[in-house]
Every structure is written in C-alpha cells, then in structure tokens.
Length: 431
Image (cartoon, rainbow, N blue to C red; front, side, top):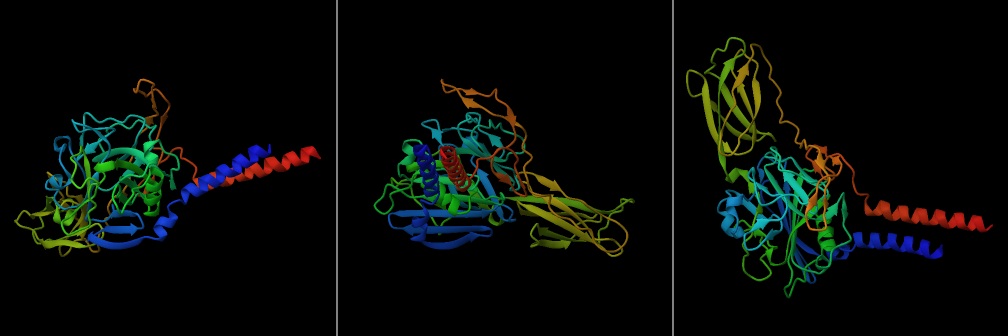
C-alpha cells in the first residue's frame, strides 16, 4: 500500500515537473520582438546554450494568409520556394518526408492540391486550414482524409495537446536537436511557429518535450513537431529574422509552410454591378467603398459604365463591398477575393434610407466524422475503428468537438487525491 501511494505521488510530481521543465530557460531568455507585416509578430530569443524564434500570425487579420507547398514544388529549398510565394514573411518545414523522392509522410495539401503520395497514417497529427483562416488540429488516431474545404494541410508528431506539453517521447525525440513546431492557440485564431536552433556551439537544441514547452509558452494549445535535425530552419523575408540549418547550408525539402502578407502578395479581381432591388434598374451614380473585414478602407470609387459596372484588382483576402446612391438604402455584401479567379460581387439597393449591415461569416471548420485508425504490425493502417469528430484543436470561432486528453495539472491532482483517500481508507480499516 505505501509503495503504491508513493508511486502515485511520485508520478504526479514527475508530470508536474515535466510540464514546467522549460520555465527556467524562458526566464533567462533575452528576446527581441519585431513585426514584419500586419498581424504577424516575430520573437527572436537567446538563453544560455539555446536560441529559438517564435512566429505568431493572427489568422483573422485581413492581411495574414497561409500557404503550403504544392506537389509540383517539391525538392526546393525554402529560399527558392519563397520566390513562388508572393508576400512570404516566414517559411518553415511542413512535415516529415522521405528522401530522395521528397514524398511527404502524412496528409499534405498545398494551395488546395492534395499530395497523392501523402496520406494520413493514424500515427501523426494533422493541421488543416481553409482558405480564409479557419483551422484545426486532429489527433493522430483520427484518420483524416483530404476534404474539399482544406486549402492547406500538414502532418507532424504532437508535442502540445489541449494546453499541455507532452512529457513522453520516443528515443531520438528525447535527444536535444534542432526542431520545429507548428501549432494553434486555444481559440484557433493564432498560428504559432517555433523553431529552435541546435547542434551548434551556442545552441544545444531541444527535445520534443522541451519543444512542446516552448510552443506552449508561445501560446499554442495544440502543436505538432514538423521537422528536426538539419531540415529544421526558418526562412525570413529579406531583412527579417532567420534561423539557419544546423549544417550551415539550406536543405531541400518536400512541403514548406509560409505565413503570407496578403497586402504585398497575390491579387485578384472583384467585379459587379449596382442595381435597384425589384426593378433591376442600373444605378450608375452609385459610389462604392471596399473595406477589409477589420474596417480598413481598401478602395473607394464610382461605377465605370452606364450599366453601373465596376471592377477592382485587390490583394487576395476578404472584403465588405458597400454601395450608396441618393434615395436608396446603402447596400453591402461580403466578398472574398480568391487567388486565380474573378469574384462577382454585385450589390442591390432598396429604395429608402439607412444602411444594411454586413459582416464576414464566422470563421470555423465544419469537419466531418473521421474513422479512428490504428497502426498494424506490418506498418499498415487499420481504419475499421469507431467514427469520431475532430478530437483536438479548435477552429476560429468554434472549438472542434470530441474526446480530449486531460491536462497534466488535473491528472497530477487526481493522482494525489486518489492516493490520499486510499491511504486514509487503509488506516481506518486497520482500526
């Protein structure tokens, strides 16, 4: 009995200690913040024997986008791929891969294109994002297919789960090395990148539990390790913060993830007409005002023809288009500008006064039911388990539902409570 109680208390203490193991490192860190673009904050930190960089990108900010590499972009270095990503601010590796064919391990989707040689394997967690910033992280056992709403997806080893840095690790993951984590905040609004240097004179590197603790401290509620060793590096926009590969030279990879400044990146065209509701009469005297979803003015002007036609080329992001003309109620419409296509955004006005109210739709991901899989002895995947919804992470505006891992603090407390009750019961039984 006493040995059992001692074991439970020791286990609780070990879990609590593991969750806090990185605290002294952060307490000694000297960090410098910068903001290379709207909605993005980069923090470069140094501590005795360690260096790392944190990137926090507000997925709800109008100028923040995310881009993962397509299958036809494999085998490039980060700096070479950056040339194909207008507005790239920061680039990191987007998951493990096989060499020499640069085939990703785990589900990978870039710019809406699924990698045919990368499928979920019931061993890695999956981060998936839609085209307007809705995002979630699914736990390893959920077999996640490529779905139409997914604009980007990548896979990795979980290092933070439900607000707790995962204490355990496989053999090599317990060694200190350069490592990269990608995660989401609890509300799903913020994408978090953490890249730790290693294998150098001034940076020993981190283990998976230490990487998880760094990602947790940076604000991640769920995070995946997407690179380790020489493939772990951070490319920053020229003049920005970078963290080089441990071997001093860039490594080619499979897919990369880029945080994108939409204001300097890809553009698209909004176009439409302004007409009166009911009659369909053109209103060429209308004045148009195009705003970002956070209220910033992107363009203001008039129609171009007697048919009240208008068009404007703008950065790819979400907009609210407003149209006003004397004698009519000001109308508005939500219009996302999508890369590679024109978006029709006609506005229809009613007779009267006042103004319509328009807002962007709530950000969120409607993830379907996914089967729970297990890894078979031969390395294959058994997907015959029960079906479950997303089991970890949150989308912007709505948490994904399903079972979740209890946090370490609660688990440690539970161990202690059970142990003390067991011990008191034993004493009473002995009289």
